Image 1 (cartoon, rainbow, N blue to C red):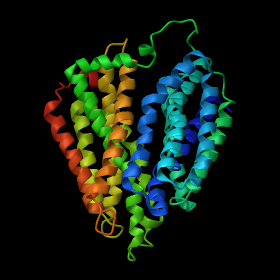
Image 2: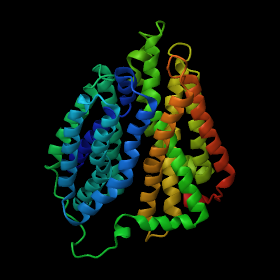
Image 3: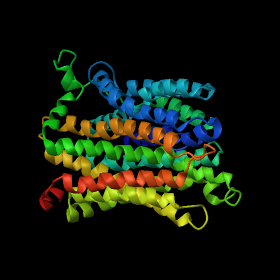
Image 4: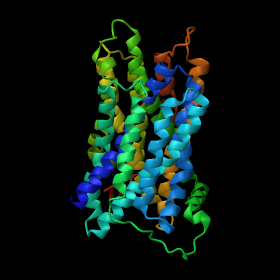
Length: 414
């Protein structure tokens, strides 16, 4: 196989492993196990906890001691082994620790997969900027494919989703050992401070008011992203309890409907250059925040019949909400930092969104639902839940609009 095809398979499987369970674990949690929202928030926070710790540690190992492709393969095999055990767990507290161990293995592989692709493409004398994006798109396709397989195989509320993810992880782990060698790039004798290796130098950016404000809002928007991943499919699946909706397209294929969100991502990426050039970074980020408000508000009043269009539109809006902040935020970091700290600053951006933001969104939403948003029978009040999330996003957008000052420079945007 060609190098590009081999890396495409890696990218596809990387996100297939994730997509097989990330969107549907809420259905398994609430419908199959009947566990609490507060405990579910704790489980979803494992993505954020592992994102804070593991990417930097595995990066040090890959830089100094072990081939990246071998470390990548080992981590996927360990993840698969843990996920095979996960369906045997009948206690939510134990479930938290087991999935935390799994996330310690999986989350750093996202960065490692990029590192492998960059290294192999450069060794093959290929243009990384031109060749990598089409390869990475297959990661999104893999995520969507996994969602479809989980739904169509009838596993969105069962332990089958974990087995599917585990077997894909085993396949990817073994496959990784067949990839071209990516040896450590840094000499073992090369000296570097621990702060430098962990990317902690970027914390000095908090001394700059504008950068500090940006990172804080990144955390708040990262929390909004978790709300969608946590509760989207669970919300659509709950209509099964209503006789008039039990056999509807939405209930039978809720995960497939949710995959429209990922399809929308790939489309809105193409629109970003136009919006950045015309409106500037701040306005594009603000559009993203308002898109989250619209996303949640549409879900609040939707249903599988007359409100079907709202569900579909909310999934389309998700692409704008997700892409516009992540891409424009990354560009803001790129144009607002010096080269010596740029990589650490990008890592800080990811840490605030996928780390602290994920923890914030997971824990607070679970607590809020259990405390304020259950009816007398203990059922989730979905309209109130989504309106609460929409109000949260609206407050963030309002504060961002006047607190964050950034002048649009068409030359930089171009």
